[in-house]
Length: 374
Ligand SMILES: CC(=O)N[C@@H]1[C@@H](OP(=O)(O)OP(=O)(O)OC[C@H]2O[C@@H](n3ccc(=O)[nH]c3=O)[C@H](O)[C@@H]2O)O[C@H](CO)[C@@H](O)[C@@H]1O
Image (cartoon, rainbow, N blue to C red; front, side):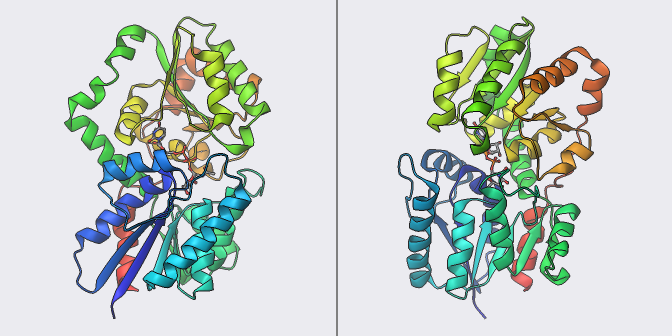
């Protein structure tokens, strides 16, 4: 029987984590398999950067993003437009990734149309429906609809089993972000012009240790971001560090970082970077301060310690492996843990092991096998 997979993606991390699956499926070149890619463009600019790099051209582009979009309006528009598109395309299976509004409405809409759903990066749970908000509930909704759950780790698979998902529907695959990262790393290593992009930073701050900072989570908007900025100011009182910060375009974070740091001599504020540029930046940094999910999964490949600016994480594998620590948006903990890493070589060495507990680079291969064999 002809298989027709519809792959939905809306944000930068979904594109990063799904392009290895899309490209792998395409490379199988099977006559009995059709692939349709639909971008909802929940985040326009950040998504387009990755699609271009990965050479993925969506068959449908719903171009859903509006300025200051609220979650409820975004969700309503997504649900209606994905539903109309499914009506037209009538795929045999819908594939969604992670925990965005696109993934959640994509799964719900597929369910309304009685189309089975595969969930890539299934089973991540923080146990707190407000952290991360609204992603924790988005994942649970997708999990209750999907009939193929691609769990990145054994722990994620265990979380699904404890929610009574039948074992034969759970496949431990590794996280596709490691597949994407390996491709990006090879590109950076094979093309010296990519890392030359950072020569100016190296020249200005060659003797200083680079702290790479990313911050965009909803839970940190407001007081959290202000605490993070104050912590960075304390850290920057030291002359031996420089901060590089790709500023997320969301005004809730962008305006605060730009107003506080645009004239600081040791803070490099840059626009969101293409994936390969970000990967090469990660490789030259000394440590990472982040509230991102994907960056927590990527940093261990380069042996970079990660301080996670969240109170909980659905990725305890990094904490257990000793490559990450939770510091919340607490001034005291961010400063304290950063200073320990800067001043104590033993602690730094114990966290800076290059071992990635999230995947081995073969996740998309395993996912495609299940998709084709089912
Ligand atoms: C609650 C939560 O954790 N949810 C996550 C969330 O995504 P996130 O927190 O990982 O989101 P971001 O931080 O935006 O993206 C990160 C990616 O972007 C790359 N990057 C970064 C800066 C830059 O300048 N250029 C880049 O290319 C970077 O290397 C990395 O790969 O949604 C995903 C989708 O469902 C889920 O998988 C995932 O659970």
